[in-house]
Length: 131
Image (cartoon, rainbow, N blue to C red):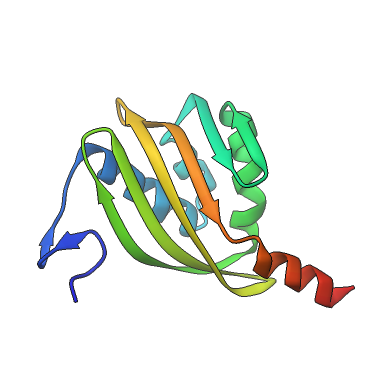
C-alpha cells in the first residue's frame, strides 16, 4: 500500500498539499508557533464547536489540543493548487484514538479556510468516565 501523500508509490506534490503537510507536521510535532506561520491572519475555521475567525481565535482553538497531544498517524493526504485534505488519527492525554480530517484552502502559502471534522465522542466518553 502506498504511503500517505503518495499515489502508486509516487509522491504527490501540489502547493496546497505542501502547505498543509508542513502545517500538520509542525503542530503534531508540538511546534504551535511554526504551525501558525502557515495560518493567514484572517483565517476562517469551521469546526464541530462552531466557526472561528482570525488567527488569534485559531491559536486559542489549537494550542490546548497541541498541549495534550501524545502522537499522530497520518492516514492520507491529497491536494491540488488551492485545496488539500489530511486524514489522521491522534492520541491525546485523555484518549487513545481521536480520528480527524481537515480540508483547507490555501492562498499564497497561507491557510485561509479550514474545515475540521473530528469525532468528539472519545473526548466526551473520557470526560464522563472521570466524573
